Image (cartoon, rainbow, N blue to C red):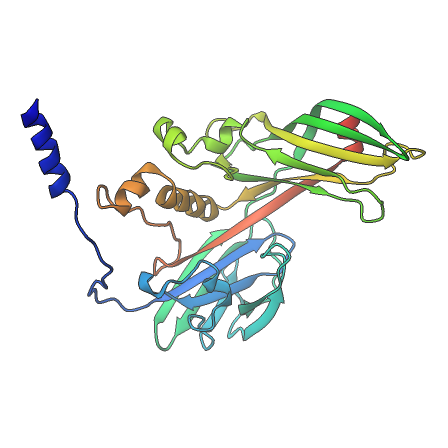
Length: 339
């Protein structure tokens, strides 16, 4: 028994040590990085930067907002369906608050007046005198409509002085029909929108954990040890050509009306959006999850497995050119609390 303790003590000492930061002497030249997401119905913005070493401590936001890495003098050409749509697009600066959840930030990139349409083939070429050239392409997917919504609510009515509050939770089944063709990729999004003209605000939050398609990329082991919350991407490999209901829960509902009003006088609503994704969008986001939250990525980060690289469809391996096509329906919150 004493020998066993001595062995454990020896191993503990041998495996204990100090560490310090160091800069690996790896020769690497920055290359051109292109990021662009073509959304049907919105003008296309293109972000052209250089790559950077990890020790520069850049964040993912830098590809949109950082002066140091933005390539302001690149020659950028946009091709649509194999024809030049615009070339020598000028570098621009503008402010954007949608991307940053209401916080206004200065954006740096190449703005176009091109509005993507379903089925368009988009190719972007960027040439820098200092860092060389890069290019990539994607196909804008076709939107898939939401067919119908099935609602099951568990709501309690509370009578206040001057107001009535409906509180509880609801299960939503969001039906759509997957086209019976090639592999399709999707992302789901839900939001609660208040009636700005009504005196009472409605609240509620969405739980996506009931839907198995949102974790189809997660192995049984990863479902135990990895972070899976917040991912609502999925493919059609389990539902190809079929109608399918996504299972969503709306919890913490508080919907209030004035006592003399009708239940639907408060126009608050739930927006449900099904995005059709380009293959490049889907593969990039899944590779980000595998790199940052998957088991293989975690092991690769400590040298116990091959490194997981983020997927790119740009010729330099830096950035992603993607496309999405949304289909949105709005469901009155009054309908949800009354069913």
